[in-house]
Length: 141
Image (cartoon, rainbow, N blue to C red; front, top):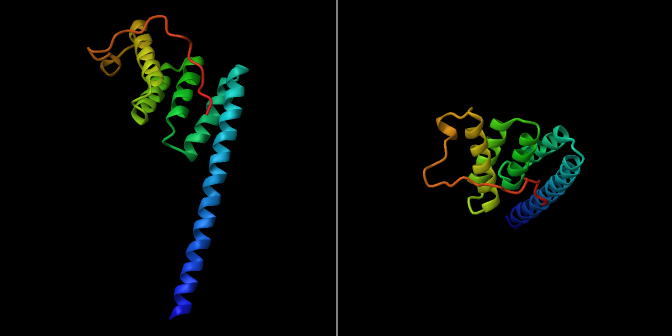
């Protein structure tokens, strides 16, 4: 009986070690993808940056900074509706980030001013337009 418990304990420890290794590997991949995406964005290669940020989201679907970066990328190539969705998701995941909220509001304001807004994109009455906001840049993680 003792041998069975020892075997179970050893197997459990081995399984945890494997899982920890996978998590470390994924974190390194996320960091590598983000670094490459930011370098791509700085070089004006927005489609490549967007591709890499989407790869990050396939590994870590709750990464608010990546959604914000994705919004910046989509805005840069003129996909404003996709940018709005990405910013919205970033603010849902991290509602305390003023930068994500600013980007989301500014994007919604842009849609409203361009005359392509729907009822979903109208700002809430408590929101004030953000004028002269600094240009968005991807977050470095």
